[in-house]
Every structure is written in structure tokens, then in C-alpha cells.
Amino acid sequence: MKMIDLSMTIRPHWRWPVETKLRHDFGKADFRSSMAQLPAHAYTHVDTPLHCVPGGTPLEKLPVDAYSGSAAVVDLSAVVRPNEGISARAIEERGGHIRPNDIIVLKTCWDAHYSPYSEEYWREAPFVTDEAALWLKSKNPRVVAFDFPQDSATKDVKRKTPVTLEESTTHKHLLVHGVLFVEYMMNLGQVTGPRITLIALPLKIEGFEGCPARVVAIEDEL
Image 1 (cartoon, rainbow, N blue to C red):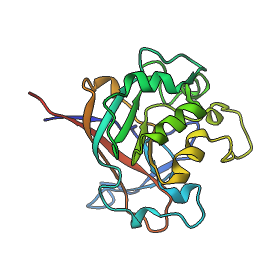
Image 2: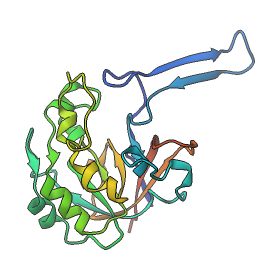
Image 3: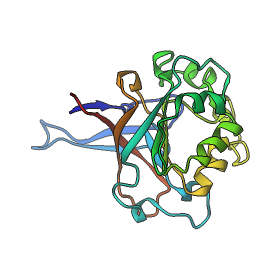
């Protein structure tokens, strides 16, 4: 069994207000104790329907395996281009192994082009088109996972106003309809096969609509 860490390291980031500090350290205490404050939708994280559906399911109401299980990896790394939409055809041609109720992992290896800690990662990113989001919905997945900022509205790194649901292609076509999300994964270039077991475990925080998660791919070694 091979385990691959698909998670971003939580450290200072230009896009997200993050504060980490030591409450106690050795020399003044017998134990080291740290604190962290960060947004729920930062770094590698999960979304629940409550993110964009009033009255939607919060994090603690979902089963522990809601974001984990058998996953089809759709390898788009050879066809994605900066600032271009990913078409339904591109996904369909590479997604013949998708099964009903699968987790669908869209693999672009975008972090191999730009660091997720850079502005270019967002500004130059490919994105999911409306037709592609609708095609994904037609496959009846329970989770879709992304290793790139999948909605074009997130590309404007200087934007001061909130992004609307109408602008958020994947959210309006998938998350609104109960398809869960894992966002901003890394290291999918280390995944070699078309199918993996995906493990994504967010903290169980009451009333939250999303949370950073440790996400791991498991590949069986023959």
C-alpha cells in the first residue's frame, strides 16, 4: 500500500488571513502549546452543501467517510492550458472509468506549474466550464476533488467584492445539488493509476460548512 499526501502545508499565505502562535514554550513551561486561526475554506479543505445552500448539511452531520472512498482519477495534466476552460469533452475522453457514486478526482498537476502559495497559481489557472460541470453532475458522483482553483471567479487575485454563486460554476452545478467537494489538493503528479482510495478527514466542527482537511491517496502496490 502506497500513501500519498495530497494536502497543502498550512503556513502564512497571501490569500488567507492565518495566525499561528505559541501559547507556551519550553523554558517557561514543561509543555509546548500552539494556537492557530485560519479560514474554513483555506488550504486543502472540504465543502459541505451549507456553504451555498441555506439550511444545508453542516460538517458534523455528515458521516465520517463522506469524503473518502473509491475514486476515479481523471488525468487532465496533458491537456490543461493557462487561463483556459476545461471542456466536458476533455473530461469525458479521460473519464471512461468513472462509476456511479464515485469520487471523481480531477488531476491537472497545476501545482507543478505554479506554487499554490503564489498569485500565479490563481491568476493563470485553468477552470471548469459550465458544460464540464454539468457533465460531471450527469455521472452522479458523491464527491468531486480538485487540484486547482476550479471556478474562474477565483482567478481575480485583486478582487474586493464577494464572489457570487452564479459566478461559481462548480458550486452552482454540483455543490448546490449535494455533490461534496475537496478543494486545493497537491501532489497528484505522484498518483500513477486511474483509481485510488481517497481519504479526506476534516475536523468535526459543529455548524461549519467547510474545514481544512488532511487528504491522502492510497494506491495498491502489486
